Image (cartoon, rainbow, N blue to C red; front, side, top):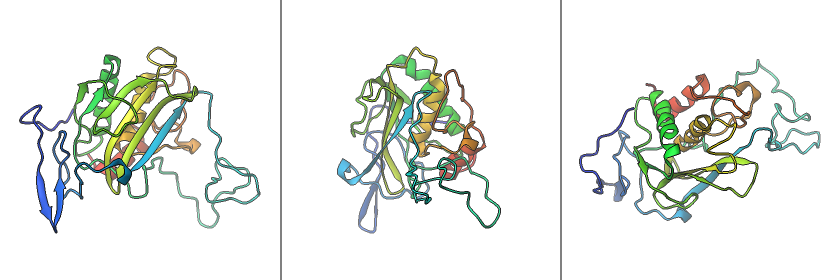
Length: 259
């Protein structure tokens, strides 16, 4: 696995540049900048200045209904793949589905490296494998190192928490919260529901790989032609997806460059 070497472990490393009167710095908690020309990073940015998005992974057999209002008009939130009152795009030949998507239109990503904190040893190996898989498709590091430390899910605290917990919806097997601003991701927390893990008919490494895809900046896929891709939004029991298909590879390389 590719890793940035930290010269002094446990010591805060902060590199500060002054550009046009703005302070640009690497995160105060750990890591080094990986961008050639890092965009603005505001140290100690309050949560109120960030956008928080939560990705919910539902249990096999439970598929959240797609937005179809049945009024006979294909609205902006309706898709022809799911709604009977919509039709395929007309005109020229339909373009093939790319099978990748992003957190937002600005394509937020990591522009520095931060560690992640797993609260249970069961999560160490699948997290490490997921990080290796995503980073192996790119030209640079995305994530830092895994550290054994328990931190709460869903709390903006400069700790990328990987944990087990009990989400309020019994149909949810995993949930990822991400905080971002513009093109920068500032933090992610991933939780795997104890109603299904660590012992179930759902493949934990597959779900971990999917959630780390969100942490890197990728969104869910719901077009049925993308069903073999790890970022597809639904999962069957005993289904295993621990390698990247063309969609996942293209998506992560769009954000971080080719290997």
